[in-house]
Image (cartoon, rainbow, N blue to C red):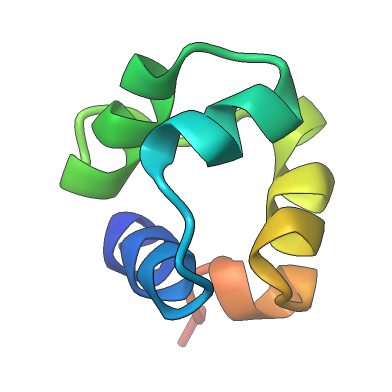
Length: 65
């Protein structure tokens, strides 16, 4: 799941959900929904989200087996 990775990276960087949302131009409720697994970020947000969180895009995407 992508939610725990988003939350862990956000907390590691000392960011609030609002700060992440502001950086992406979205409401912090979207970020919260991603973190708890109610929604997943859309393709248009993934690259910027990884950048804001200091991650590579591959670090956010679930591993396929």
